[in-house]
Length: 325
Image (cartoon, rainbow, N blue to C red):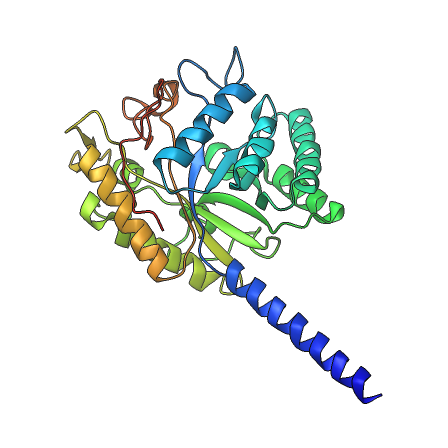
């Protein structure tokens, strides 16, 4: 009897220590980079889709030239499903976004594929998001689609934490001081995209934010959302700075004032200082973005194709150096 009691005590202590070790290992903040394989002349809007070969090449480049071993992907259809086996092979973790948009049939397909991939790659896919900036792109028109995605993932009992990604402003319910929005109670985690570069152009809420002050701005917006949602894990899911056209400034539409300057030096400063501050506060973050995308000017103007830490054409050289952990 005594041997059995001692054995049970040993088993309980072993399980407790294992649990504590797992919790400790998984409490470390993620340092990820946004990954979209639409390099060269590829575009998500039409034509050829990224294939497994280009996805493997780009991930090999990240492994070789950067410290990132975590990426955030933007969809699970149209060739993007090849990201997950490629990431697994290389030991790369993935925050997987199930792309939600105005086509409900495509959304249904995306949700179904997302659930299947989450089950197939439970150790590679570490988080799931129902959409990215759906409210920012469509106002409130497709809130029901976001909720449908959340409900489907819950019903499927996926292993990964479930969240939604949008701008910090949407997560503050477009209010100051910050208030919860309708998804706050429905998610395990909150993803906030914070871009002073675009705030400088469109928002009159804050004064011009320079590259030197951008890391503090990122943390301040995180603190607002976290204070409003204290029980939720909040991640800075996109932050960055354009490296070109070199020396050109963002112009405020409110005041006409030049705010911030595009340059490789400023981009590197923003990425490095932000990760430093996030790490100090144990906040997970995702730099935007791994590879520049040449199709972006159609969507985001002259600066749109200059956000990558690595080039959009072969050999996809990375120009932002980061310290390896």
